[in-house]
Each structure stands twice: as structure tokens, then as C-alpha cells.
Image (cartoon, rainbow, N blue to C red; front, side, top):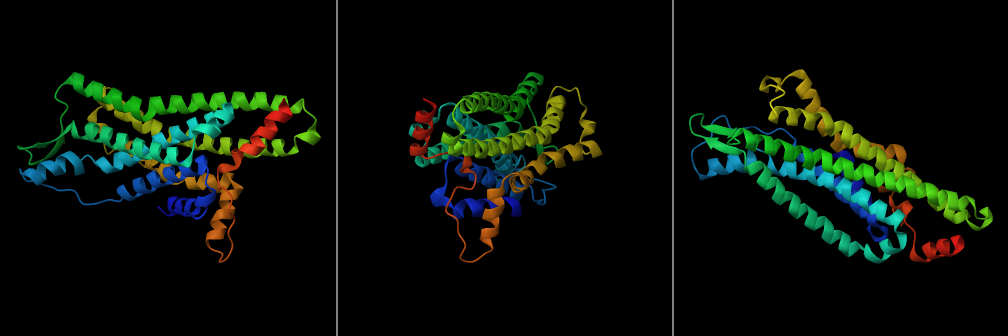
Length: 306
């Protein structure tokens, strides 16, 4: 909560200079901050009354709808950052025309709304009140339904996001390689500013690649375990074992890892954090937007290459 809170404050302080990467990383920090808040332990009901409030508890509180919504929002914000960087680097001219702060804000709000709706369906479907136990249980109804549910969650939370992020990163790397070859053919005295721009942009890309790899390492074992439970390859006795607890801990470590990666890999973030604690010092430049240029500088680079 502390680490992501610092990221939120840094992005907010430089909000006038924010570009798309800053806005999306701010949204990612909010999602991780909420995840960190929702995993704070709270007492569960030992017995649930057979009433309207009891059934609401089983449908919404028992499956931790808000926690899983914030987790999914964090994952798909990472997907959004990958797509944003892909558009900015592979299609820079179109990117400046299409991507604006207003449109990006609408996209973030829309994605959160859709994710919340999907999470409601995902969590409400298997959770129900059991009269004999006087408590909440997960009931999939049939073997096929449980298998379908497990496959959906596995694809939704791991396979599709990971594939999308790695494919866009490969396309970004390929585009940067082609651009660096073109710059090497141009007189170095005419491309000093552009070369510095490429170095700054490369730093942001590598930092985000590390964030993506961390997400896969943290959430991969947990989601594979959950898929194995639904396929009945892994027995239910595996729950609450030391290995299961380690997988769960590893998954939620992802929520606090990103600020540490920013601090280790991005000098401008360290500068921005220091400015939070120094009165009267303020740098009005993007924190994570090193990879983006103004329209004028982009057109200058393009004319130089031509």
C-alpha cells in the first residue's frame, strides 16, 4: 500500500505533464493499491443465516468480488500499457492523433466497468448458501461446468494477458531494432536528440518488460494450481499446505513488486519520489513518459530519416 501510494502521489503531482504511460501506470498503481487493501485479513462468518443478507454475503463477500476485480484490473492495465507502447513505437504518427488523455481516461473507466461485470459473473456463479452447513460453499453444478469455469479463469487471468503482452513486446523489440539500424545510417551529428530519445524509450520498454515477467512469475503457479484443481489433477487436500500458501503469497507479492521495479530501473521515478519530501522543488516533466515525444520533435525525426 505504501509503495503504490507513492506511485499515485508522484503521478498526481506531475499530472499536468502526464502522458499515456504515466496515466496507465497511475491506473496500475491504483489497482495494486486496492488489491493490497482488500487482502488485509478480515473475520469470516462461522455460520451464515438463511436470509437475504446471508445470501448476499455468500454471493459477494465470501468470494471477495472486489479483491478479484482489482486483481483483474491490474492485469489488464498491464495489457493496456503493452498495447499503448506498441502503438507509440510502431505507429508513432497515428498514436499522437488517436491517443489523448480524455480518450485514455474513458478507456480505463470502461475497462474497469467491464472487469467488474465479468468478476461479478465469475464469482457469483459458483458461490451459494448451503442450508445443511449453514455456510457458504462453491457449487459448480456439474463436472462440465467446473471444467469450463476453470478454463475460463485460466485463459482470462493468465493465458490471454500473457500472450498479448509478450507478442506486443516482441513487436516493440523488432521495431526498435529496425529504428536503431536506420539511425546508424544517418549522420550522428544530426540525430543526437533522436538517439537520446531512443535510449530513454528503451529504458521504459525494458522496465515494463520486467514488470510483465514479474507478473507471469508471480501469478503463473497460482493459476496453474487453480486450473489443476478444476481439472481434478490436483486433489483438494492440497489446499492450505505449505506449497499452496507459498503460491498464494507469491501471487500477491506482485502487487507490491512494481514500485520496487520503478525505483530500481527508472531514475526519473527516484527523482520524483525525492521531490515529494523536498519543499519547493517540482519538476514538471513526465515521470514515465520518456519514450514519448512532442509532435514537433516526432516530425523533425521523421524528416531527418527521410
